[in-house]
Image 1: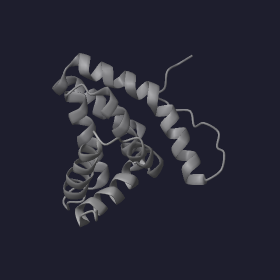
Image 2: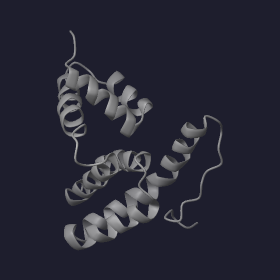
Image 3: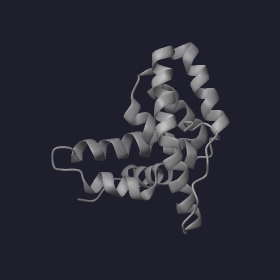
Length: 148
């Protein structure tokens, strides 16, 4: 079955934001039960919303993270944290987003988000560095990572 133009645009932007390996792995691991959901997600969320003019990908990533923090969705925070890094969000911007979320989303939600960031950010930075340089890279030490 031929996919819609919005699905194809959505697939392209989803890969750009989240990374081709992640998207390919997600779609490969999708079964018949979940396939319609993945198609709808790709076509509508990514193909119709993420491709709209008016906001940059970086702005969309920060907004999405803020909403995931408000909804206390740690798995989505981790996924969209990668997107935020890929879209150019700095560690300072991520920290400020989490501090801002403390006021508007509540302490427990922002504390949980900080834990996701502390656990996930070093691996995300390392893997994105490798992907950009296409060679083994030393792990960049994040100023926001856990102290040993």
